[in-house]
Image (cartoon, rainbow, N blue to C red; front, side, top):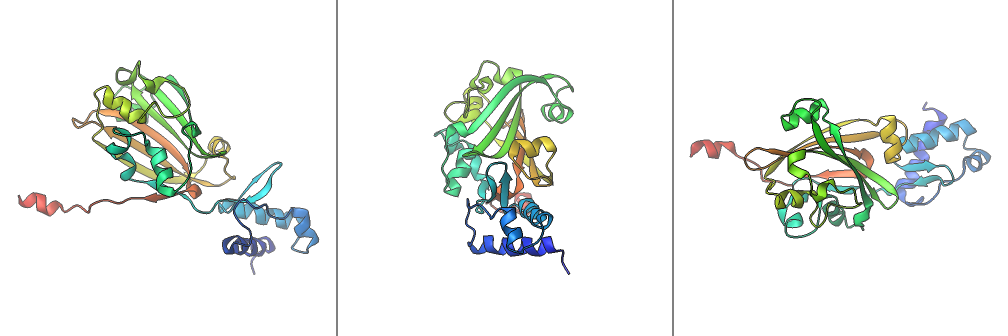
Length: 262
């Protein structure tokens, strides 16, 4: 037999999925479920923690346990970097995701800090620099309303961005079109990029920053952005709350045999 807390967690999860408990609705107080005969205080608490770990609810002091919005943000793959969005318009990547998801956004929902740092090994290797060389780090935290969705830190060579809007810490994207438009105007038009994804448990600092439950998972993104001649103009590390995104890729299937036949 499953433990009592697991049985209660599954019962509550079914009520959430059926819509009986709607997104944004507060679940009953622990004492109310205890009085209703659903189990001891420790049983109900364990059930709520299980729901939180599964991404179904959030818990905070003063707000109780609240049903989480279940429709994840669509995190576009290739389409979010379409040049027409940022070169000819003002739809930077995180805004492209919101538009594709039918969700509202404000430019100020992206905040950042900019600093000169010594390049960690992975950053130095991406840029072809010596470990410890000075690079600009542009660290962003992106929120949807009051809830953080992900963090992203981009690392740039000093000679590529010094004196540009990229090193301006004002909240929001770096002017119209964001960082890619800044690089474009500086003569560094992005041509191709590589993204690597890995899933892992959030660190305590990440859990605090992204408002995650203990043990909740994140998707770590490494993005390397190149010009047509192979120059790396940005290396970025992102940490995304796994339950808050659905990753979407749409691309033409390659056929390398056709190229070889020519």
